[in-house]
Image (tube, rainbow, N blue to C red; front, side):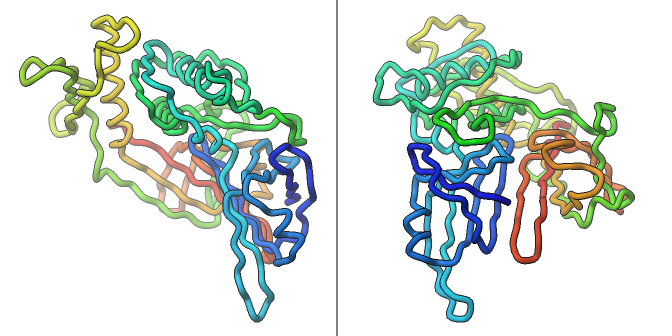
Length: 353
């Protein structure tokens, strides 16, 4: 794994080829992170400083150094532990400026709020010049939301979580340049049931699944929301989201009194109901059942990471106990140290019924 270090103005400073270990994690709709351990030296302390970038030519992900520590080791010599998050963390440096209401499609909302607060804000000093919007995918997920001064990364994360979208802030063309592209995307379904080539199946039968950890958790699961908006007592505006019946119906109450029909934009009754339902969807997305696989795979045989499958894609998992599931790859951790190189994906399926 070849690592490059650049300063905050994107000037490449050095190739980092003396590391003891590297952990490099990409995630579907959250920030990725990294950890690099190198032998301590005055040169390394000058090179590895907060806000410098670490990147690879074989990966569009860009990491930002946030923390540098000196670790003492009397037997093997001192070493530096350098950690940070991926470039998506830059979005957390901005908030929604004032009040924002939107009624339309989720992708349009994210692109609009990114443009207003990061890419081309009215106040020039709020602009992050290196961030530009990537292509519009035309995703048609309806949304009705109101935000007031929330952190931008939280807004993007919550919206993507609700609609199973991924987001990334990436370089293009291998080498790090002065522009990072904000992209929304949805992973490709390579599961056995969809027959989309390449079909990707991880199973002991194929000698590409070394071990697995499995968890099915329905402890906090809910599928129906009773949502109360503005007003007092029985006069509060209300909405119901979800239609399960009998013992399969699991209800929660959502207090959406903060959703106001007196925002800066004209809001129809339909738009207000949409905003209430979106608040309910937000709470239900946090109450989904979790069906999780964390596995170690053999990455050198049947399938190639980033070629046959990638973060956000859906694949099929079969373990030795007869558990079969089509699951999304929510993160992938690459690790390299003295024992070799490994790829560890985390798979997750959200249970809706």
